[in-house]
Image 1 (tube, rainbow, N blue to C red):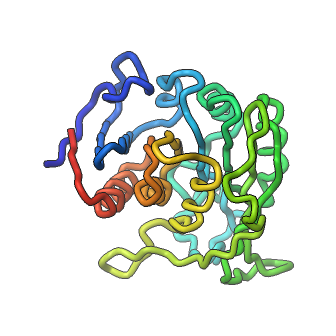
Image 2: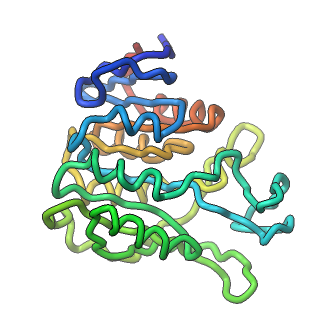
Length: 265
């Protein structure tokens, strides 16, 4: 039975007071999949210090066609506003969430941030100035090429940070170039469920390398829920936050579908 309500999450590692967002708690055997529809900045404030084992996320960043309607990232931008923004919620700065990421992560934990070349320097400077150690940048080779003004784009950056002492990844034989096809999930009408959806396999590699089973993985920009699905597949607990109600519902359905025994309360 599905139940969505406003209130405090059940697990005591998250918060100790009422949190006024839509909350769906999914329990698969011993796993906790906690999904929130609301502003991640509000949610982050409710998470206890040093309580998260891993952050894997793809924050919103400005995707534009320089103010003109055109093909960017394989998308025909039909709803660009005057600033060239593609998505409804696209005005959050990394300086707003980087300090909270650092606060909630346990010492020695890892953080993976996906970004593009436009935001690369700002991301690096902001996260390191907030205490993170930059380990290296990974490359997600999407396989498909996208037409640009100069060179065709085929990859995205994944910035790999740690908090505090250095801890090796679980599989040191993993290449820093991750060749994962960029295949989009389609809805019943054949449309992409999310234009910047990340492959579940990509998320699984990051999660398995930087956490253990039953650890807590946080994705404050959950989107269509790929990180949550990867957590179900790899036996990790998950906290996901998504501001857009439509994407939240898509994520909820995907995680539900990948959860064999589901209890909602």
